[in-house]
Length: 444
Image (cartoon, rainbow, N blue to C red; front, side, top):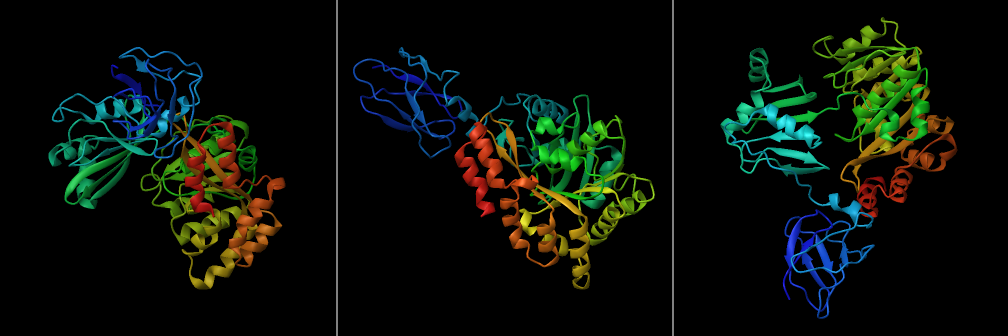
């Protein structure tokens, strides 16, 4: 019997299969996903396929409308098949850049990356240009870059004065703008060679509705005073969510918002409110200098890009005490580590004071993770802590390991646990149970 071309339900790549009378398990030649193909008896079989949701797990699924497969036909999935949303969970693929590396421009790389909706671009010697898609690094050029090619591409976005600053400091962060959008760029030396990482930014702030966040986050955005923290590990969308909260305030409330960022990633236009954006190192010396000045600029809302030192934390708490709404981000793995993380910046003699001020000013904490979705994109899973009397007591009395119990039992206050958020996404069909299990490892 002639070989049949089979389309992998993981990555949609095609490969040849020799029909057999019994079921056979083969690995896709493209993504190495494990696929089980139904056996045939004498004639080409009905197109029945089983495949894992993510290699190497195995789950049996039948096509919705079986059909006869002719020799050299492609065994495909119907649009209504439950397998269709699963394809992007394997290694993504995209068309390669065909321009010779010696002639390749960084602007062509940026245009190609934005066209294929990648999140980050990596340029490094000894590797091809790499695009990050759904948490995976995917080659965008057929060959690896040399040191000279990597240096040329990395420095192409910098002016002469910026190149001088880079060579003096050995690292350089800046915002780049071209005809297609805005980019956050970091250029640095790596083992003596120059490389760069570029984050592709949205052309406008996303709204809370577009992010599909819980309604309680919109309620936090309407708070008039106190401290709201957005937490999570790196590259989990904290800045995007905080920008969406500012956009929500700007759209529906007549408030004066001052942001202190490094660098400014999203540009706000004044709507119902007034938004003034300041970049640390350009518009103000640093975070705590800008924050101290903001207290004298009649703000209703102050947004701090990141709490990165004790001076910034002290002034942010002072601003929250004086009646401003303060928004900021913090890098932590889970909400029950928040107090330890904040106190790690503080001298031992200030710990008690920080605990009491934090208990009085903290309004809520949004802890989030971006998880890979079945459609190839990402979905936001978030844990929300609303500060009530039980939370205040725990913060003051060093019992932060009880915060998870407060979240679990605080549904009537609008609190949401990470497990609940992930289970909602599974029930919606947005993510797989395997993805939920992978994320929940950090929340037990």
